[in-house]
Image 1: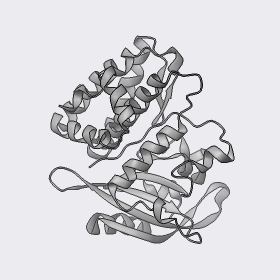
Image 2: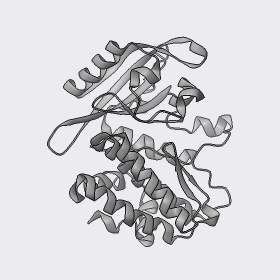
Image 3: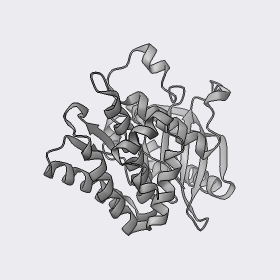
Length: 277
């Protein structure tokens, strides 16, 4: 029942760096709750819909953000929730400057501990281009791997000590996962409350860590290592109070298992794996 958001904003990327982006072949990755409200959209999705909509993304109906027919989107979400997976369903969307574009939508359903449908992981691509088999996201685990790689790709770590960069990667992925889960199970206001908690706690301690519209902004060269552990402790308590500690631990384990050994090792040293139980 996992999916996460939030990255350090991408700087201008060279063609070589962009070619390394695990989601570069897609038109976007967007996550919704069971009602079809947007929980998060990745950088490619924001490029697709344009800056006017990007700033007010979370909590808005997907059909509204995509400029698509309400019934078509409702049917898509319902089909995914019922079947668990839908591949390459065509949808007409309105992109930047009001242009119409046909996209192929593939969606994976996510569920809570009781098997209740809580949201969709939706990948968009150009229907005229066949996706490489290695880039197809057929399972929720595929999405987890792709998002972790994308967070790593989008992180600007020049001049940053490697251990700090890895600690930030782990922290960002875990907190982002909880933000999406809370948005799906508690609604947009709960996700916003989590964001406010991070920003408030960091500001109080004068740590240069913020979430802006679901995306992390972290000045790693000015962030003390203990910041990650202390903020995670507060967020763990917050999330456990909303959805229960068991659900939070399971969510974090799903992210942890997809991390590279070197990232897990650094996270353990910082104390970020202490919450896995």
